[in-house]
Length: 234
Ligand code: HEC
Image (cartoon, rainbow, N blue to C red; front, side, top):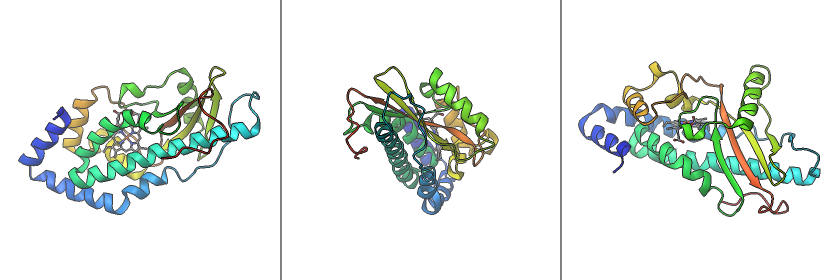
């Protein structure tokens, strides 16, 4: 049993208030969880890519569509697993899912499409492994500046090195997200303790509904991916 699971286990056994938390989160999950998570994907429009003119419009469109599909697949996979965890073990269990699942998901989602990885990044990361590189940073900063004026922000795509393109799509904060990404003083105390323990450098707090939380980042290797092939299959 890992640390997080041990923590959850211990508190589930010892503290009756955990049951209250579980119940209220069960309600949340019943009423809104999936809707809220999926709502993040509703503004899927195939936006104008930023790749240079080396690609024909058809090829550009094909990679944009793969990027959109991969972002949705990650969101759907996470939401399904979050929902199940919340039902079974409450928000603390859901944190465990985010921790254990988020990173491997970036690989697992690529199943069926060799040469594609999808991950998440943000200007304020919880896990330092999700920290933005220079290209990510440019996109995120531009979007942050734009954020007040134009919503939703459209996806972008960049040519990285002639063999790789990167697709970015904004992730907005929904009501559900605030449970774990809201201001510290609004987080459930046990959750706060757990987050402090797991992510001592956590910057992903203080968000409110509607805030730009970060970006999906889909990296595609053009040598491996056939643009003619349809989008990702689960
Ligand atoms: C149960 C708690 C929980 C909920 C609910 C939650 N998150 Fe997170 N989130 C986490 C944890 C834990 C991580 C760190 C995952 C990892 O280790 O990669 C994370 C990471 C992220 C990241 C990756 C960047 C970073 O900060 O490391 C993004 C983006 C993100 N969450 C957005 C969202 C959005 C949008 C929602 C709502 C749809 C949401 N989260 C709901 C706990 C949660």
